[in-house]
Length: 82
Image (cartoon, rainbow, N blue to C red; front, top):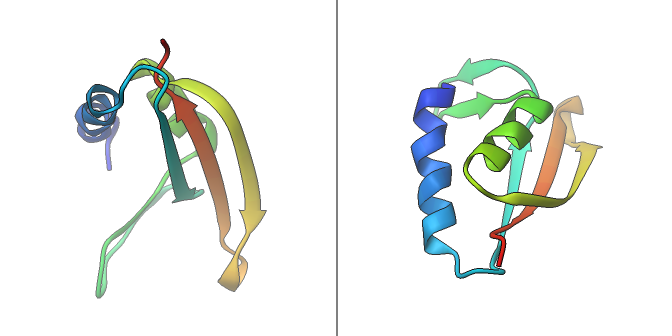
């Protein structure tokens, strides 16, 4: 998913949150997309974090782990500022 497509989605998340509200996102780390029974979009961790910030969300914490199939995942907890 391109930056142009994710920006409006994250802005809707921002608008849906009350001031002080939080948003938890988990995503696969990488580049590109896969198709099959469902579509998977990979993101560079820093690039997705920057998109959260651009949408007006303030990063509270992030984590990273290796899941099944040796796939890297990231979690982000972001806050709509007061």
